[in-house]
Image (cartoon, rainbow over all chains, first blue to last red; front, side, top):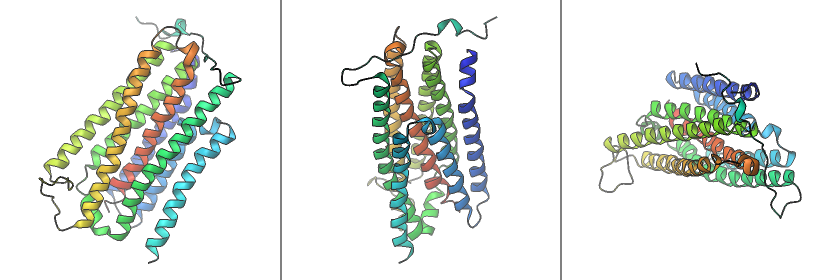
Length: 91
Length: 225
């Protein structure tokens, strides 16, 4: 392994450690299920998705148009979830 | 003793061959990435629909969904999440090695990624087998369902199989492409002509990981309480 390669792996290794740590947090929450735990689990999973999206998939380094599309995809799914759940939760 | 810097001498020129429809190589790289992202977004919408069904079922029938979710193999799902996170790390290793022209290291990282993907599939197959043994496969007519009077749980389990099955199909496709790509990428001169293919495929692999990171809490985790 060259020094350049080792240097280039710093961010992926940190991201991997963070993802495993957040997963550990989620698994702990799953063991001590309490009212509202689902919100914390969803929040931790959201952070995991952002880490993957911006660092593993390198969205943070992409030109604006690719960043726009990447974020817009999730925004579109969020709109779908919010509108559907608005219907079911207010019936 | 094996030298630590065993790949120093293996650094090769890194570039892409310009296709005739592009003006510059930078434009070609950009177009390839943009195309991949557009496709991944359509995939995200596909999985989004399946996960929305699970969420709506949880809102409408929380008791039934909880009853069904307790039959899911939580620790197999958790182990598979660890496996995919590690595979993302090895894929990042392959991408970084390709950028530095370290072909041997890149190929090894790609093989490790494929190996971890295969471990995921084996664990998933075992999980499905256990589901079958426990009569938790409601769409099989010849197999009595474990919760016969709970129709909402039947819907949830069917959605579970649809979402995890679709994810599995993506992973099988990913491993197949990865193996072909690894074979091509191990040939001399590959990195000087097609380096960006490793990066484009890497996006797909990370996306498979990303989808599982959403699937795992949606199906396994939040429904346990």
